[in-house]
Image (tube, rainbow, N blue to C red; front, top):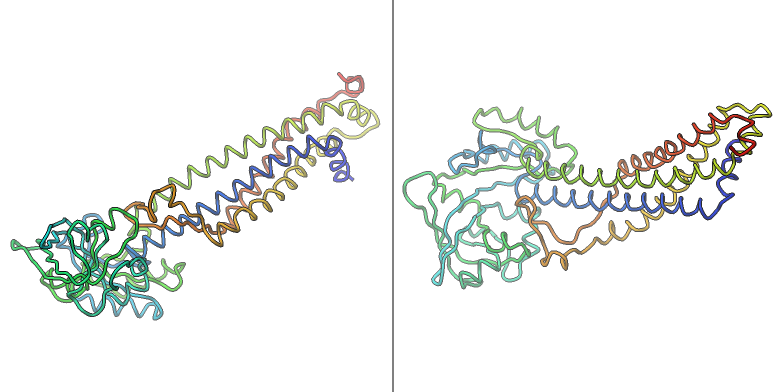
Length: 409
């Protein structure tokens, strides 16, 4: 009976109720769209960071995370690869050597970060093979080098041309090696295209002067949610004290911190929006209560309990919140569907096809992802706000005196 009364009372002034419901729906739809957009962008960032800079499980020399010194290396890397592969037979295990030095061509030179990778494993993880604009990805030839379009232009080289890498790695003498350009890529990130080059992992070990030695061995799981379990298994399998085993969160702390800061600021904005909408609900319910002062006086006079009247007003706020939030959910899903299915292209705003976030290159086309737990949480919060917004008008009705209320006082 109270529910029927609440519905009837809300639609006494249909225009006001409809406007309030529209405000709730718009606010919640905006929240749904924002949650799906940010969740998708965080997922893209995490996937890119894991594939480009780390793994779900990362093995490196003790202290390398705090200070990535060239001298901190993983010796007997093949043993580590075997141990990690046994944890998840379907996973991909990568090896990387990170070098800093000078790349020289007959017409110029440029400082470069050279990443030595396993071509087969890296091909299944990296975005670079899909961004090659000339030539091809690395193969078994450890003399091949893959460079960015900007670096190629600065050095004045093309596919098939020779380059020389020079760098000092752990000794007093400068190590050098001749390479031939295997391919040229373009990501749209100025830092990546102008500074980074890729070579075979065997070439990287040779430049370090130590075969079967790398800076990092990473495990990329088929089921990312098993990262904590796989990290514990890797620590148990690798008892060498000179190694540290990290999960991706520990290996990419800056990215994790950046995501948390951004998520907190977005949630604060959404909380503010829901609070503003709740203030509108206060106005709607309060006006409805004031218009029915005489009715409430009559109800009190014939013996209806104050608590029952207060419950009726709270129920009106609840119904308003449920209907508005439900409409907002439908609208938010409709707005989010193209975002989740096709993505949103920000390249025209960013001026490039990719952008750099914490040293990770991410595509400017961001696909959303359904964030069901947070949508449910904000939906419940939206309804709760409307009920709380009705609490003050409900309290006012409980203070009415029957005679004064019937007089409209």
